[in-house]
Image (cartoon, rainbow, N blue to C red):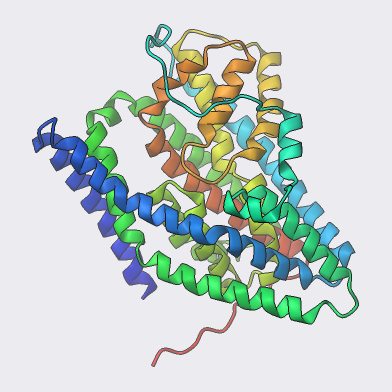
Length: 414
């Protein structure tokens, strides 16, 4: 069944590109916007369904995961190891983006002038370290869930789960409620995922229909350079997995194949989260570790998004003939190390961080216009990389905790 679903996804991708190209070539200018809107609706429905389930899923799985820890010290130990790995992976991702874009120079020679028209983009007003830290703490968990503020939900869940772990009786009724609610949400997720191939078709058809294939040629150097950087990052992540987990990392990454493909196709890391949460325990990564590390990873360990921040920022500077000094690049790395922790695993969120970085260095934030056209294509790659990065992180932390066990037995098919 899994193989059939993967085939459906691949078929939807191919059909989506072909349909989008046909619409771009043969529809009139009056007909094309209607077709794009129709295709986009499929993707919007799917992502709304994902957003519908993501908050309660994170809340209950994280409470259950932390609550099963032996004590509060275990929570702190696992959390410390996970955050240590996240910070190291963040620095490697950001630095790799800098090295690759400086080596490949994809924007050199473009000699672009300041964009003449205003660019409609997310605001960066109030985007500071202070506002980020205060924003982490929810004034109301109900409000946080209503707004899908994943980072706030994570903070609340950590407090509740830690309190449960500190109790002598482990609050069995609360734990049973959290576990049953998590099971229900996973079943809801299973139903939502059946719509994924249609969403993938709509997403790709809309993008190609609107932009056409020539956009791929125009930005081939930028796209190729960034995907080359992602390829190097994948090698680094897999090598790190080999060092800390051993050859078993390949089987674990096999469980992430379908979620990564889903993230790539929908350009949304969140779309892959439920499948990853369900799949990793089946290959022996402790469910307690997965339920704890993955939600944290989706707020603090978006490796693909971070490498994009440095790569895209310096590409924009190159395209406009701006040269950063070494000390400015180091400052950029530190700035992005902090601000990238607020990136949500949804399309185009990285643009806010890039605009904030441009403004910090006194560059016009409307320069981001040169990457907006291909951002969706690049978002696909970085979303898939986020999945791989969090998979490796979960496996490594489980190994460190001695909770990399035998794969869960699968029910026999009659």
